[in-house]
Length: 607
Image 1 (cartoon, rainbow, N blue to C red):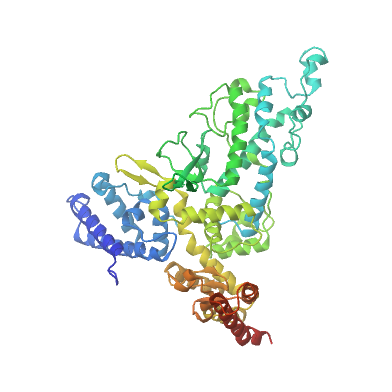
Image 2 (spheres, helix red, strand yellow):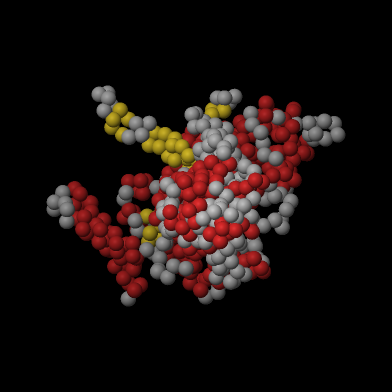
């Protein structure tokens, strides 16, 4: 099976043996109540491919070697296996059905339902990755709208509670017709009510509300912005967000404080803000949690402020049963028929939102087509140039996995500071090995006596998105970077760029080859001080900070602007050391190697 007999490989072999044993003696099936030799042989051929796929994941720093249990219980891993391997999908479905008959008691886990993945629906269309320009606009737009709403966090509750008076906020003419008496008995009109609660800056622009009849729709638009921010920065599914209770935020300690023998605190504890669909945070609960950066914490606080006001109108407690997104229909005229429930974000209630007003441009369509060459976006009316981008909540899950996984290693220009900070934190937490992930984002299973990460958790999609983002960055450097590239891989990419520009090769061929090599672990991509590195696996020089070794490395991508910046930085650093010192000699040697490379290759090309 494997060329090297490592412990992880031996564990896969033992696991495969156990699965075959279970399939032979406990799966049943067939007319005689047992599997035939030919069927078992077909199952074994797929299991071999599965073992190889699991072992190949060790090339990906955010995944590592998978077990067959992980493969058959996490839909993201299984989908990646299906897309990257060639075999009869009906055989895989047969394996999963047989494992279901074997049962959890013997296997130790419940395998995925074969009906849950698209093995026989080739025409089904996956949610697209949001093009970069539109994605960045959504990040900036939701950030600005959230800042606008956050200014009213302390006043939303008192404002909404006033609408317990059914006459509050309606115009004075209607109040007079209702026989409320003289002006002394009149309630403030909507504009005055907003001013009285110092919410004029909040109920403006996107959230302008001139009449009471519009208040319900405006509150839904506010909740929709909050919901979008949560999707944007966490990767939660639609149902997961809508299940969130009022008390959904907590801090989980990921590293306790360090105290020395004298009782002095040396290192402060590290904690991470998380979202959960549970209401208690003592221990680990069976609903998973999600990483919540600062923007999400602000969004939840806005939703909680609105929820507190609505809860008082509904006369319910803010307990475990109170949803975060309470339906604001109770502020309307039909409050007698209003029932406690969650908001319905239908297209009718969110139409006119600025989030749905971003139009598709030609470059967006081109990028969209490059993101999925197997799909003809040009002939889909929903993605025509000039049409508003057809935004759905699940697009954020795919896009966050794609862009977020790359941001820890590759920078996206003009990315909002909050988002970039958040994705670096995500790389820190989601980039940990599986065991560490489970203790932070999972729950403790009393039966298994172990921590379990829910199989639908966003962390898995985040991990598996890395190869695709690496491939796209390599292609972007190859085809769209006007600056010449040097170094081992850089020189090769320059030659490929010339072949592409002359029409000798097609972008589809380059893309397919690059994606395949990244997925197989043959190449990688990480930034270096001088440009980038496509070498897969460990690099001792990188770990030791010896960046000048990149100049002679066959996997290096050297960019002239970064080389010049490195020379300037090293020259400035040289001035801080005494001449003749060890540090002086090391830095001087680096400068000499850098300038020699620049004179020999880059300067000669420019001339």
